[in-house]
Amino acid sequence: MTAEGDRHEWNLEDIYPDLEAWDAALTGIQDGIESLRDLAGTLDSGPSALLHCLDLHVTVLKAMYRASSYASMKYHEDTRVGATAGMEQRVGLIATQLSEAASYIEPEILSIGRETVNRYLEAEPELRSYAHQLDDILRRAEHTRSASEEEIIAAAGLVTEVPSTGYAMLANADAPWPRVTLSTGTEFLLNQAGYSRYRSTADRDDRELVFREFFSVWQQFRRTLGTLLYAQVKRDVFYARVRKYDSSLDASLDADRIPPSVYRTLIEQANEHLHVLHRYFGLRARMMGLDQMRYWDIYPPLVRGDDSYPIERGKQLVLDSLAPLGDEARRPIERGFDSRWMDVYPRQGKKSGAYMNGHVYDVHPYVLMNYNDDYESVSTLAHEWGHALHSYLTNETQHFVNADYSIFVAEVASTLNEALLLHRMLDEAADAAGRLFYLGHALEQLRGTFFRQSMFAEFELSIHEKVEAGSALTADEFGKLYGNLLRRYHGHEEGVVHIDDVFEVEWAYIPHFYYNFYVYQYATAVAASSFLAEQILDGRPGAAAAYLDLLRAGGAGYPYDLLVEAGVDLAGPEPYRALMRRMGHIMDEIESLLEEGAA
Image (cartoon, rainbow, N blue to C red; front, top):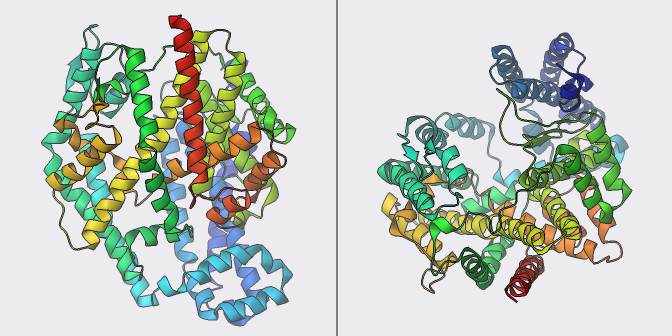
């Protein structure tokens, strides 16, 4: 392997020097698990006993995260290597042992009760690092059942994962995906990956072919997929009822103590601002020279860019974009770029996509990329290093127990970096064509991240509420509900985007509907980051500092509360209005550039 190759591959020796060290760490973890088992039944002995147990649990859990991260990243370097796949399996089994060994901790804390726990916190200052964790356990007391009932609920997991497993098996293994030939002669397998790649192809007839062929497969299996999704919704309703929540939504949001008003405000604001989305579609039709937008016209880029962005240029653009946040944000990322915290390029066997791993608490974050020297890669680079900055500042500031932050806040960091990158790219753009490219790219990201995810969120809420009200749902019912939303969001009745009946089955394609109220967080996060970016870029005093304090807070508080402290209330309309202003300004500039070009 060349030195150049090394420079663009992450250095996992920062975690362990070799496999022998990783193996020794697993032995230490297993010893710690046995020691943790021995403490069962001791937590009511006093504050020192509780502290000892929590400290030991954290020590073992932190070592577990480290070992697990190392194993998964070794595997992702080359997924063809059986030995590293075995490492992941081995560490997974030990993680299960740890979970079982620690299962007594929450029930014993609940049996101690809040009043006694508060006395413990007063008597033992070192316990205060665990104050938020203890509060989170105690506040859910009314939703925690008896030991025997909890055992039954846990055992139900043997069957309640069947809907999502069945969906994954059908979608990824058993569906008869067709081979399709485009007008260019390109032939490909039209599975999910093929659809994602070719739905934006330049030729309109080819796009229609891709859409119709792809969704015809889902149409063939809609009854089976409808049965699976109905079972998934009933699963969510079952867990909400046995834990004494008023609704599935309440049960899901209570995991992070998110007010249900946040979810409902998101849907209200998305619907209130559909005119912004419809304006975007009208602009897209104009730029594409279309009299009538169809569903297959949504994904092609408004302006196709052919500029090259080698990794060193991409890194510099990301670093330059952080200027409004100051050196405190720039320095860790610059250090990461220079110190092999990132695996940069695609290669045979390497895991696809991109992610950030921030779980190696005592080391540093790691970023996996599949960088292709295009602008999409630069945008992904900014996104993932937003997550890395979040983890770096959190791990630097917080006790390990408070370092695991919620997705509700996590996506704020990544999408704010994207907003800062756009600001930087517009400064760099040398001509109108360049500005149109960057503006169009940003507009499509915002459309997909906010309006599409809000539509999903509204569908997910509606199907859960129907089951909670005693209604049965079939594939036809799913199609009717989803089709109505699809047409409303895309302005079908107003003549904005024509939606054919066949696309009502898109609900069957979306895996997120098996994630139990998950995707709404992408939409709320981009609204929050738009609000924060607006303040930061306007130079509002204290805005950058408040944002960095949010990142440093990690999981030391409930995520909604942490955002409120940073000045963002997602239960109110202002963050969503900031996002709409952002989209409006982008469209204003695009229209101005188009008028100048026409003149």
